[in-house]
Length: 331
Image (cartoon, rainbow, N blue to C red; front, side, top):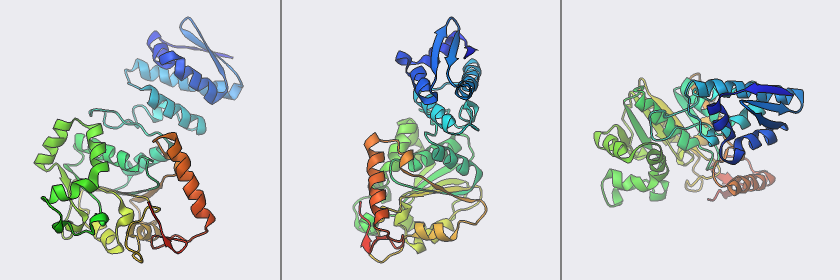
């Protein structure tokens, strides 16, 4: 049993609505927590009590310094710390908070998301590979906006292959932006969720945020930019090589994709799979892999992804040219 002294503000923030944070900690660490005056009494196994005591001491120090923490962010951090004793709240607040000057603050929700953010900070080119709903595109956009607001880059370039249009954008109505917009909705959804719409519109008008259809990027050099290539599993080998060689000085690139959702014509190899196979040993370039445990959508999505993954593995199909057991992968 241990006693931890906390300020009134720390106690108020810690307990949360209907004491949900304290109940969450009790279940997570297998302890009981009681409030007495300006302190908490923690009872349970010694190691569990000691771990929770360290978390609460860090929590109180961060609150006293004025750091803001939502209940959702706290729960995500608590869960990751419980799974990895080497972590502390100081590894998340404010170190892992993104967009502190934007409309919303962003915090990684899983260990793989945290590694992804760390990889983007440490490397100029990062691949985020995994199923939908794992935050790979959302976090890439959050990191891009963070770099832009901190003036680490002067612009953001968003791109993806328009396989659904057969890359023949010239046959679609409208200007370039109108042609590619329907295929970039996930990126736009993240932008408008994270930053005020007026600021997004201004950045678009100024060219600070640029739409660059992948098919039209040949011959360019992108300097001082944060570049995001989404849906990269639908790039061909030639397109992936072309994209990677567009990256200029003082730029970062994040390439995201799901190798189980390849829409290329039958027999065409995925540039994302090829890049993963041949670029893994290059310094300054990192690959981050996500799985169903990183899904932050409806809880059933995690179970659905896992079921499909198990079904695919049971067929014992080699991963290759967008094919599973001799058949094209399907959405």
